[in-house]
Amino acid sequence: MSVKLPIYLDYSATTPVDPRVAQKMIPYLTEHFGNPASRSHAFGWEAEKAVEEARGHVAALLNADPKEIVWTSGATEGNNLALKGAANFNKGKGKHIITQKTEHKAVLDTVRELERQGFEATYLDPEPNGLVDLKKLEAAIRPDTILVSIMMVNNEIGVIQPIAEIGEICRARGIVFHCDAVQAAGKVPIDLQKLKIDLLTVTAHKVYGPKGIGALYVRRKPRVRIEPQNHGGGHERGFRSGTLATHQIVGMGEAFRIARAEMATENERIRMLRDRLLKGIKEIEEIYVNGDLERRIPGNLNVSFNFVEGESLIMAIKDVAVSSGSACTSASLEPSYVLRALGRSDELAHSSIRFTLGRFTTEEEVDYTVDLLKRKIAKLRELSPLWEMHKEGVDLNTVQWAAH
Amino acid sequence: MAYSDKVIDHYENPRNVGSFDKNDEGVGTGMVGAPACGDVMKLQIRVNEQGIIEDARFKTYGCGSAIASSSLVTEWVKGKSIDEAEKIRNTQIAEELALPPVKIHCSILAEDAIKAAISDYRKKHGLTEPAPVEAKKVA
Image 1 (tube, each protein chain N blue to C red):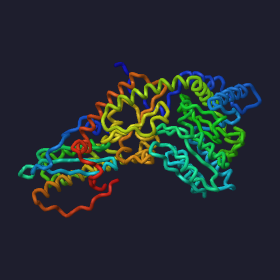
Image 2: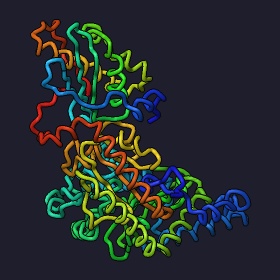
Image 3: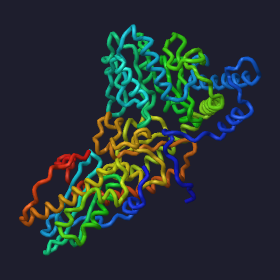
Image 4: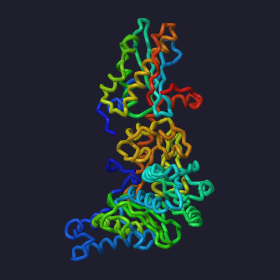
């Protein structure tokens, strides 16, 4: 088999820049280097034109108005600006924020910071399939709730939240609704003319664009107000001061343009590969798919291999780049907080691997991965005292483990 | 996580993997750790009539460092008396494998596994235990 190693199956961590995107960016580093804020000469005008064209592409993928797009340095900044900006602007109306336990750390840690500043927060538990229960959300709303933040697609398990319904619930009560759509853009159709989302975060590097650039959608009708977090030259209509990174913005625009044009066919291809991977993995005993399989983006498969510890499995399949938990937490020894929130046992959370497929994944790579997994799981289970006990018919839940 | 060459060697070619019959008179079995913490080590020793460890086996559920630590100690205990084997310290294991600070607990678990196996053997033979050592808080 002629497969080039290592194989990249971690597209939810980041994606390679599409060569078409890179080509488009290069002239904006050298020839067209102007500052888009320079109004007095052609260098500035040219850069500004490129920035506005890119803004149009980003808006088009979201079916939004280009005036609703604010450039940021990426998703973390976008989430910080949305949450801190909306909470602080609305603090006269109330101090309660609702989010969920399986959000990305960029949301959870920002809400924690807002709690330190005097806001109060409710962290909803997801259902065992990873989705928010709308009744629980409604029950959590208080008269002083000002902000709800629920992601569109989860980064670890790829499940798609009922965003349209959440939007209706929030709009009916005059609550600002922020949605982290970092893992959704380019994978799930997003129509902001229909969805009642007020603030929406996206980033370029998950959509085959460059790292270091993202955007925050800020609704104009009805108008949503946020307090800026960066002060300075008044760029981006005062929402976010700072010289615009023209080449990055051009890259994001091109990446989003390609995503809009190719999303439908690409999704089908990736879904076929994901299903092929799942079919292969299902031939292994004692595996558990984490999160709802139907309401999920095509490229994600999160599986727990019982009786095998995740980090040792990652080491065993080192020719395949995958992650255990999310990339941001893979240096820690804690099991995935997302899987724990779904009610998965610590054992299964410790045994989980996230496979994320993307634009450049091939059938040969999937077949290689399945074959490697089968061999390495068998080897690690030979090494596992838990597997031995399981095979002897011991119920591991009845064992009194030595405390450590 | 960058692993040392020795960890990778033990992980890829683990020594003395397997099990002895735990009811065998000459066998001491130690099982330490918990699945919820991400590590379980089972270490077994076969002791002869002179009190010398003739052979050892292990099975480990855990990360690469945990597997390497237990593989290494099966090599180290062979040929030692149980009193000598009991003196193996986690710091020696960590140093030999160049474990990074976040993986020190793997070496502690391996030390605990030796002690547990020796303790099991002594119990079977009615041998007196040395003064009990407070269980270490690892995770």
